[in-house]
Image (cartoon, rainbow, N blue to C red; front, side):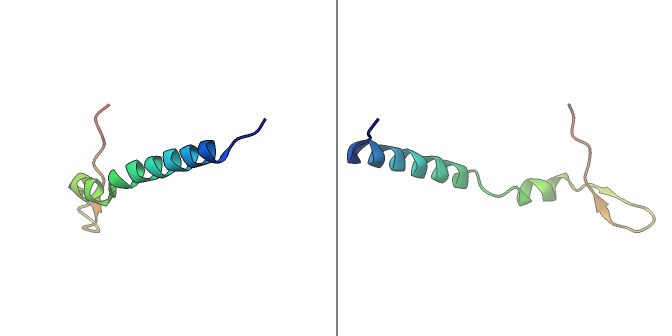
Length: 53
């Protein structure tokens, strides 16, 4: 039922690696800017283009 210091350290390293991988993916803002290609004729606001499925 225990869990020694070695196991705790291993789990902490694994958690930190997962966090770094998630942060390395970067922001979604750049892809959002690229997808704003449709412009409304009335209000001239840019809208998101539908994604192909």
